Amino acid sequence: MRWKTLNSKYLIRRPWLTARRDVVQLPNGEINDEFYVLEYPDWINVIAITDDDHFVFVRQYRYALDLDSTELCAGVIEPGETPEQGARRELLEETGYGGGEWQEIMTIGQNPSTCNNLTHCFIATGVKKLQDQQLDRTEDIEVLLLTRQEVLDLLNSNTLKQALMLAPLWRYFYNAE
Image 1 (cartoon, rainbow, N blue to C red):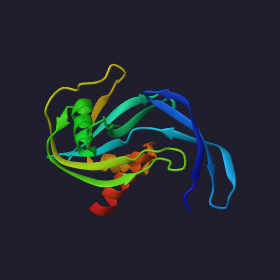
Image 2: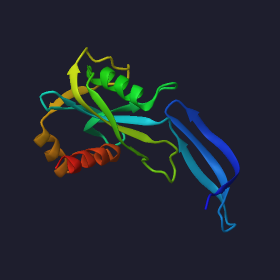
Image 3: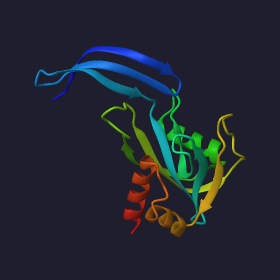
Image 4: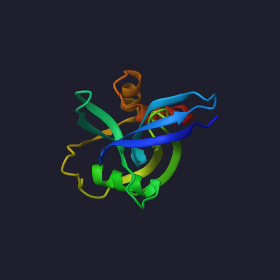
């Protein structure tokens, strides 16, 4: 059932956008001469919960949708990092929280038909404030500490828009019940 790549050409290679156009042959012999793939590094996100049962969320502006978005801490796995190392680094940099017990709960793809990366989703319990945020120059992130009920209210009100964060949150609350 695999497709055969007959040709591949990069259209753009930038730090945050790499796209290529492939010519592929399907198992039935048909040729699709215009199949586009977006290449990204693997990503992480973290459901981080403090000792006093508060969820560490972030709020940041999302230009493409023109909205202030409430989200889990998330980011890119840097070259040479394991998914857990990337998750721990991102949580510490974006929120100042760290430590605790960590578990990867799922690995998902945002759109496997056109994107080549995966998102590794973690739960970190017992996290504590360890430092101030260490944001990149293009990040403007507000840290939020939310109660369990506030997170459930966000889920049920259709406020959260990031599908890669909704999946692990729904799994977490489904398994917690």
